[in-house]
Image 1 (spheres, helix red, strand yellow):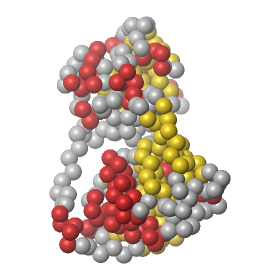
Image 2 (cartoon, rainbow, N blue to C red):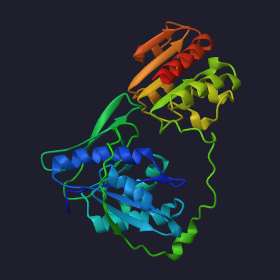
Image 3 (tube, rainbow, N blue to C red):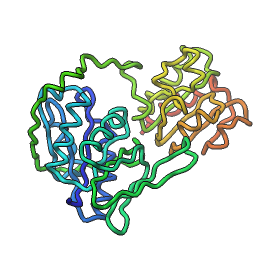
Length: 330
């Protein structure tokens, strides 16, 4: 087995998932520590553009599986294709985003390749023997566990989005290594006919580096327009507490919390959210937290880096206006 690090490039609607590029940063650190190379795996119906992007951001070699059967994600075909790439690349570690696709694909590939698996990792390193050590949150982020892999077996880790930065792009051109994967009769057991997304064209909270969330105190779906305006100015996404989603103000696909989505953005702005423990479990890992609430005793202020005791309805439009002014002046 080589010391190379392989990164799975996840694509959605023919767009490269940002978290795949972030995984390249983790791969570069591991490769530098272990003396290996960074490689990438791209699967799809047309992969040239995505392969080139992975190369510009640090992948020396890109293994590709291309064809119409791979136009949409299918657990059966993708797991077989990625297993074939692993066999060809022979990496010591496979990294992939801890996304919905990653959570479905990683264990399937681990079984096919007889590999160890650690999910939703926030830190990766190599021990003295060159084996992967992954740090991942447990108990809703209240504690962390370290997963030690056997140096003699391949290791697979899914990496939480926004934990690592996107590597700077360069003019490098990667070596392209096509891998042939033939269709099997069993592939027809699962057919993806249509992918329907809630929330329209808005960014998903798990992918955005900035998230603006609202609670039940927003009082209506119409009032969430303030949050969307601020999120658009910041190129972020809009989230919501469970209470706001249960009240019908936002779809549950935007729910942040224990029973919703766990996110790790660079900036989290909590608007009118008290900070129930279930909500904190979903956003505690945010790099910077800003809380806006009229109740100065609200639990959200205990985890916030910056707190604003103010009426959201009065403060948020002023904040949005000021950010627009600063951006236009810059």
